[in-house]
Image 1: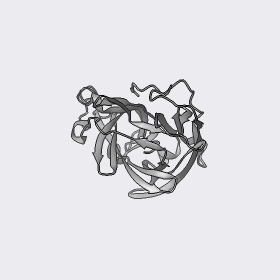
Image 2 (image 1 turned 90 degrees about the vertical axis):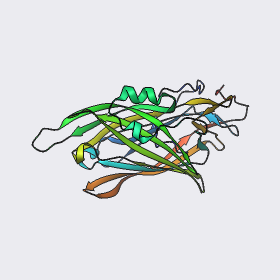
Image 3 (image 1 turned 30 degrees about the vertical axis):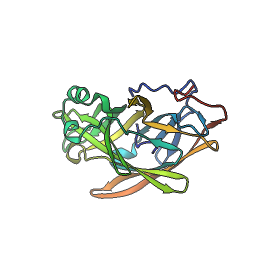
Image 4 (image 1 turned 60 degrees about the vertical axis):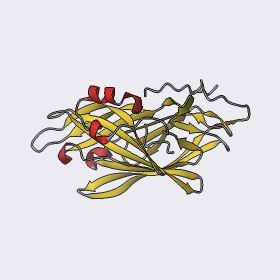
Length: 264
């Protein structure tokens, strides 16, 4: 899959070993704050046996206040995969309820990631209002070659309203890349809101037919994992443009010794 995606980004029960994560890769634009940071852990992985991994992504940028973030497109290394076969899915209708506790209880088994988000609401004739929300990432199911995740947050003003971004992860054969994750972020506060920061982490294991699976897994064949993508911003109403392109190379340590499925 994607090291997403994205995203991706936790209340997972998977053990990924004791290796510390590398410092996240930062991709910068012309504005002074980093646009994105992305990380994958652990660093040591089997050459042949897929191992559970944790993916994290975050962003903080003044650029997003001027041109709202509307989505991502991320190509991910073919050695990173997503597996939700046998994992329950949660539908959009449930996720659009404004009551987070009710949603979390109804779809607890489908949660694959957690995080936080910040936004700025700039209503006409009002000073900008900063707001924040917890984020939950839900499994939306599999159809053919496409896996769906839903990232849910809440805009608290003027009344709580769920905001749901959908991530579509398609398996592809494109040289070194094995999946393309496309994320679309909905309009916030009728167009008066813009995301200013977010942080997500995806890590989840589950049991299906007596076997333990990890939503995200990876192997390390040659000392690196690759990703390539772009962030889409709305500079003018209704017009998307690519503001940031993101080539990322993550080092990994290919292990010649057998590594257990719990990362040990």
